[in-house]
Image (cartoon, rainbow, N blue to C red; front, top):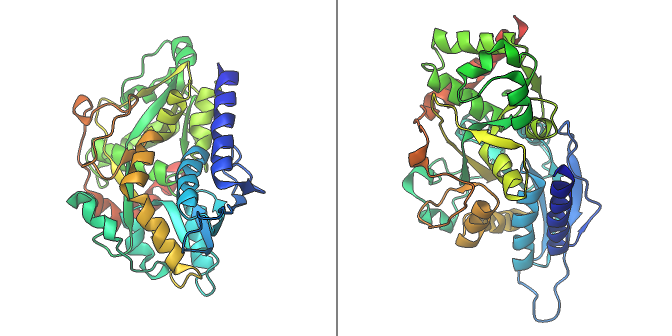
Length: 362
């Protein structure tokens, strides 16, 4: 089945490349190493759009999501030449901060959350898309910086065979403390990965909040069960699917994409303690070289067309006013859904990350 999935993924990637006529692209490796490439498309007579020039994207999204969204944008604006750098959220943000005096990118696509508007406000331009008015109030751009385009729910990704071999049935975070799973649980680093930060927020919410002693006792116990922590979020869901780990602390869109492409032998678990969600967004880099094209890209992400593509790629689109169905995305009414104090978590992100680092050293 893995061979079948690989073929399907390769086919989808090939379609994405055809849509964008990509050249010199590299996919992100299992360790999350930054990939770079260019996407360009020449319009035929009668197809030329008014917009032209370049657009440089720093992105955290998966290959499938990138190719689907950027490919559709490229069809709409065939005379814009696109180049990109694909990496983790931490690496993209570090690059933007390092280049603040001479920005090399135009937009950060994905991986940004509310907390980034507090810590990196000086790195991004103020821009509110006209399409922002179509979003529900909870996902509107109230900061003037961050345009929300999808929401992510943390989940557990479980390998069926290894779960059976361990003799456990994983339904909750508490189940991860079972000694039978020692060394068989993998997570990305919440100080480097936006999806892992989302997981940490969920765990803290489930166990009483970021200042809760119970929450940090749980995290210490999870680490003591030989939790494997890596920088790359892709290494989590790939590692579980490949049979290297029994369970991964990951995020819904990546798992849904794999299931929709035919993945077998793995399943999603929404922890019984409850799950939270967090809105992810994109922003225009301050003093970028191609601001008008960056605005067009932001506009596209929250257009009806862009939002439909998000849902088709396995993500929950921000515009919940659009009635779009994906068989792999369960209705929130069927999940123990909790509301996190995202503002408090964002305002204390640095402290929380320091507490995580301290816990990993014990």
